[in-house]
Length: 258
Image (tube, rainbow, N blue to C red; front, side, top):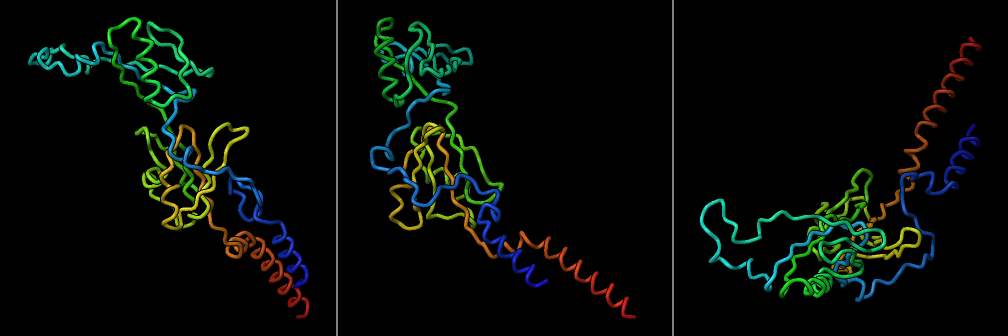
C-alpha cells in the first residue's frame, strides 16, 4: 500500500504545473522571445484604434465662442456658447475609418489624439473658418489580472496618457500572490501579439512602469507557484479516501480475527 501511495504521489508531481494550477493563464514556454519594451513604445501617446468611440465638437474662429463671455446672458436660457451642446459619439469602423458630418468617411486609426485633431481641423477648414476641434476617445479600456484568482478587472482609460503604474494603483496594486518580477504586457493582434516582460520589483523598473497603455492592452501578473502547498491541497481528497479505505480494511480484519 505504501508503494501504491508513493507511485501515486510521484505521478502527480510529474504531471507538472498544469495539474497543480489548472486556472493559470497565458503561460509562456522557457526561452520565450519576449518583445523589447524600448523608449519609442513605452512613451508612445495613445493611438486611436478600431472599435473606439470618439466624440468630436467643432467650433469656428479658433474656438472664439468657447471664451466669448460677452455673449453669455444671465439665466438658464443662455445660448451664447456651445460648451453645453449635445455631444455625439462616432464609431471607428473595422477598416479604420469613421463617418463624420460634412467630411464623410475619414481614416483615423493610428493617429494620436493631437495628430487626429490637427488632421481633422485641416479637413474642416475647407468648410469652416479657422476650425477648432475638441476630440476625445470615450471607450478605451485595458484588462488586468493582478495575480490572484477572482481579481481581474476591466479598467477604463480616462486619461490619454494613463500609465501601467496608474492602472496598478487603480486596481489596488499587485496582490500578495502576484510576482512583481513577472508582469506580462500583451499588446496588438491577438493572433500574433507582442508580449513584453516587465520587472517592477526594484526602483529600476519605474521607467517601464511609466509605460503608456493602449486600448485593448492586457496586463497579466504571474501568480506565485507554491508546489508543495498546492500539491497537498490537490491530493487531500484522494488521501482522505485512501485513509477511509485503509481504516475500513483494518476494521474488517479485526472483526474477522474476533
